Structure formats: C-alpha cells, structure tokens
Length: 205
Ligand SMILES: [Mg+2]
Ligand SMILES: [Zn+2]
Image 1 (cartoon, helix red, strand yellow):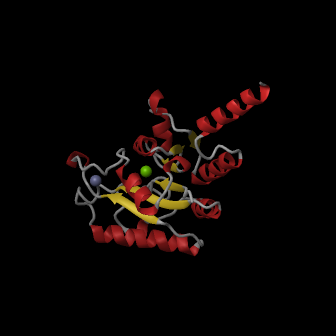
Image 2 (image 1 turned 135 degrees about the vertical axis):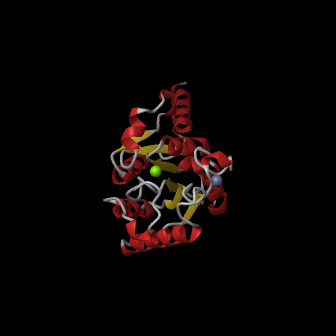
Image 3 (image 1 turned 120 degrees about the horizontal axis):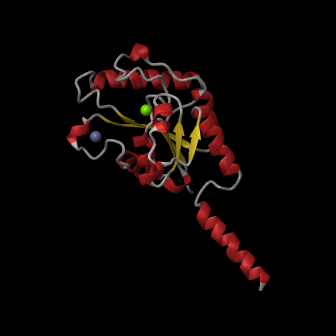
C-alpha cells in the first residue's frame, strides 16, 4: 500500500514562533492547527514534524528542554484528538555542515524510509524557503504558509523556488491538499495526464 504523508515545519507553521523557542511554557499552537491535522489524518495522511533547532548548537536550550517542548506539543495535539507519527529535528549550527539541516531533504528522506512513505504522494508545508527547498528536493509537493515568516518569505522568493501552493495557514493548506486529491491530482499529475492523452489518441484511431 502506498503511504502518503504531510511533513510539517514546526515554528511558524504549527506553533507561534517567538524566535528560538526555549521555554516549554511558551509553546502555543497556531489557530486551526488541530482541525487541519485531524482533517489530514482523516484522509489517511501520516504526519511528521521536520524542524531545524539550531538553538541547541547555539547553547540557547538543551535536548531536555526540546523534549519537554515536544511533550507539550504532543499533549496539545492529543487533547484535540490527533497524534504525530514522528518528530525529526536537526540540533546543529548552520556552520556545522551537518547534512540534516533544512534545506537538506535528509530528515524527510529518513522519515520516508523509516515509515515507508511514498514521497511523490506527499507534501511539505512550511513558512520558509528552506522548507520549500527541502520538500522539493525530497520529491514532495510543497506549500508555503503565510503564518510565521511566510509573508516575508513570499516577498523574497526567488522565481525558481516557487512552492506548488501558497496558503494563508495550515488550515488552508490542509483544505488545498484534500481538494487537490479529490480532483485526482494527488500524485504524479504529469504521468496521469500523459496516460489520458495516450488513451484518447488510441481511441481516435
Ligand atoms: Mg518555520
Ligand atoms: Zn543537522
């Protein structure tokens, strides 16, 4: 069976981004996030968080604080009736050249391998160019959300780095994903179009 997934950036996409969130008590889900995840889970999508957390390498917080922040996130989502399938994060500094930090697709590729996800049937949603690049390199469709740094990202987006869709929020992104799937564009639209064209050509002969 083909497993589809939605990979989500964390800060500015799922939760309010105060800049290097270090205090678990400061964790706040953005409006509409629980409903969005419930919608995606209901349609059969696995949900993974894929996050750069260089605050660790910068000494702003430790793995223990990060674990407690993720406990808060899990608890807030569970209260809304949704669970994540996995959380992947990079604790390194941008100058570490670690290989996992977004825009590298490594964390997405790791999640896909560990959970047998079909990346072509999957999406990456985030508020920064690095999210769009990581998703695109992994072979996913990409959605830029205008929450967090999204407005700024949209204004400075290089023409070659266009996401497949721009959404106001994760709620809007989830509705777009489901509409797209309902319209038959869930996976490999170019291949589907080509197949239809060939059938038409064969029928005409
Ligand atoms: Mg972000
Ligand atoms: Zn890393």
